[in-house]
Image (tube, rainbow, N blue to C red; front, side, top):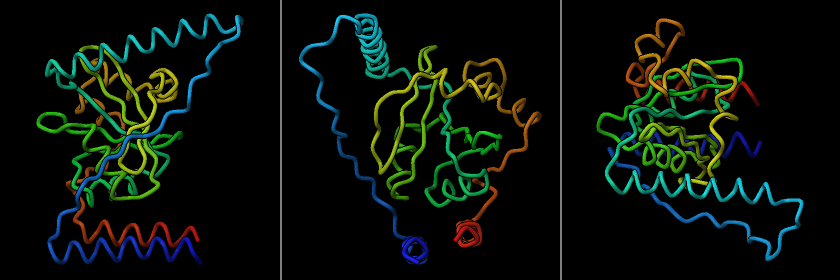
Length: 210
C-alpha cells in the first residue's frame, strides 16, 4: 500500500540519520494567503471590524516578539494519540510532556531556553503533512497558529482551540503549574523515550492502522 510504503520510507530515513548522527535541517517558506476581495458587501461590516481587530492583535504580538518578550508557556495540539505525538517529539528533539484528551493530544513545550515557534516548525518539517496547532502565552496574550510542513499558517482564535481542553487553558494562563497538571492527568515525556524506542513505537502504531 502506498501509505505504508511512504511511512516506511520516512522511518527508514530517520533510522539512517540516527545511525549516522546527522542533524535534520529546518526549512521555512512563506505560506501564500488567499487574495482579498476588492469590495466587501455591506452585510460584512462587522466581519471587517473583527478582521481589523485581529490584525491589531497580530501587530501587538509581533511588537512583543520584536521587543524580546518570550512566551511564558506554550503547547502544541494534535489529533494523534499521546504516545505517537511524544515519539515524534523525541525524534525531532523537541522536549515536551504529552497529555491525552478525548478531543486529541496536547504537548506542553519547554520555553525556558527554546523558541516554541521554531520547535513547531522543526516538528512539522521533519514529518511532512503533519498538522498541528501551536498555542502560546506571550505578554499575557494567547496566540494560536496552525503549522504544517515547517510553515506557520493563519492564526486561530484561541477559544476555538481551548474550549474542550480547560486544563490546558489553565496551564497556559498561569492558573495551574505543569506539576499540578501532571497530578490531574497522565503525561508521557519525550525525555522518557529513546529514539530507537520512538521508531519502534511508531512502526507498531501506524502499521496497525493499515
